[in-house]
Image (cartoon, rainbow, N blue to C red; front, top):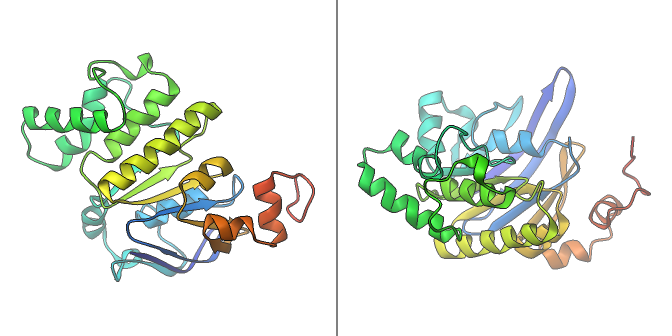
Length: 248
């Protein structure tokens, strides 16, 4: 569905992406792993056209996103949902207003229809009766769930997850993993997650790709990644300080 070819991006002469090649399959969960600062978020921003690469291309259904103007990109972005690292809820809006925000912005639905969809999406993420709560009243896990409800509000074809379990305890992280699997199965959506949470990765991924020093150094299924002998990949997934990846 998405084909990333030789993608390059530098900031102030620092190479962040140095020839990234990756295929994202439709209706699957692809997880991109790598250390903090390796460019995972930069890669996600290219996929939705928030950044333009210095070289290479990203094709969505054989259309090159990197060559599109802002109007064309806005149409493409409607096909995406996004769950941000901090959930990025609007503090001044209720839960219902947050979830309904994309529908209000991009459709001409009336309030009753929007509320019907909001309740359905909240129910899908395991939240009932929270419509009038404010973000300040929610736990970290609840905020992530509301963020996911908003991400799937417009029934997008692709949902991007930026570190979906950051700041959550292991039990809540596992709950989010279950939720991602359930919603992806129900909606048959293409999910792309970036994370350094290995238990989450092993639980949800159809395909894993490791980004290191600006390149994808290994891709495979969970079974293939666990069996890999790549020393960089092994050090990262095992969480060891000793190895080819230097700790500064």
